Amino acid sequence: MYGLPESLYIVILFLFGVIIGSFLNVVIYRLHTGKSLNDRSHCLSCGATLAWYELFPLISYLVLLGRCRNCGSWIPGRYWVVELGTGLLFIAVGMHELHIGMLVPMLIVVASLMVAVVYDLRHLIIPDEIVAITIGAVCMYVLLEKESMVTADISIVVLSGALAFFAYALLWYVSAGRWLGLGDAKLAFPLGMLLGINHIFSFVVLSFWIGALVSLAFIALRYVSARGQNPLQFSAIPLTMKSEIPFAPFLVAAFLLVFFYGLDVLEITAYGMEIIYNLLF
Image (tube, rainbow, N blue to C red; front, top):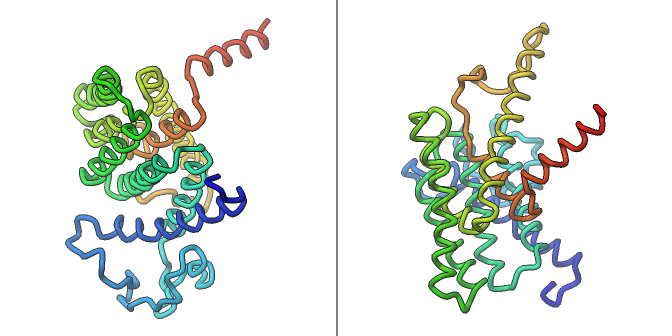
């Protein structure tokens, strides 16, 4: 691992990831608010400026028990989740045994995807700035991966991204934006460039499989909890089959599964059918 013991390499990746995750939290909160990314961090409830010892990624949140030291208000748990998730994603990328030059753009890609997912969960939109950064990082990665790339290779990479884009853009157009947003199609373009033509089908289908399973699970949980005396509050808005839901989490999850683990929906389907056949016959 670039001349480092594997355990040390993993620790470095994780620590670097949680630090970047802390910065991503700032980006997610302040993007399109007019606030500068350079302003001091503060409590969202009382406005008190945070001391230096309250800014350690992961640790400070646990020490403070998820509450503001000044006013006692709850600190959103997504801050801790983003830091931890970014650290784990950095480990996943680093263990993919990339060339050192390709490691940096790929880390930028997963960091951008983290912002896209959380921002979409909060605002039901994927910022164009995040898509642009992802496209730039993907271009760097592809060019470094294929240093002797010829015109035909470039065309295939762009075609892969275009196929992914048009697959989601068509669904956006047909549904008049009810099924997913145009931002999802835009984000699919750089992800398709990374995956290649052979994996676009699995990428698209798997994203909808994941979306369907997660959505149905939340609907079922709401239905079950609502029958009790103290229903759990999974979200502020009741979730039904017609609810508008953020699609970026499913898009990114499908990409990670296909890119890192090579999941093929045709193989999964064939395997599932074989199991069903054996059970029935």
